Length: 123
Image 1 (tube, rainbow, N blue to C red):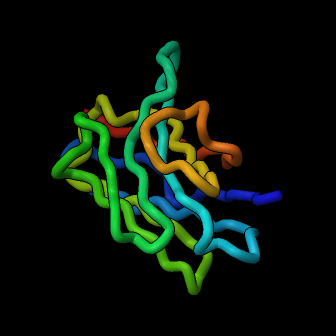
Image 2 (image 1 turned 60 degrees about the vertical axis):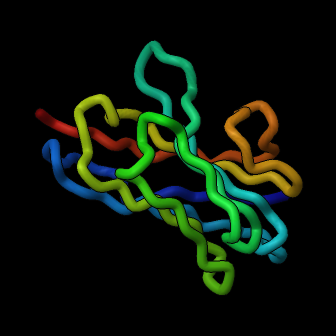
């Protein structure tokens, strides 16, 4: 069983930055592929970014490419999402997810999920 806890959300003005963190309880954190998703009110969960176990491979949703950066520190059991040039349309609850074999855009393929952290971008 893996527990994921997100933090770092908040209110920011358009054009600003935030860094989200996701801390995992897994003893073998480095074995897990990780991803970030987001969900705005009345919208489906959207893929944001994903990273392989050794950080060699990353994948981004089209709407965040060039603005967001995913990273991980296996020594700290932590994944990050650096969000720059934020836009009002980035407003959503952001979730981290983990899986042993998958790190793509399919939310249904991830086994473990955090509770989410709210990000609100004002115009």
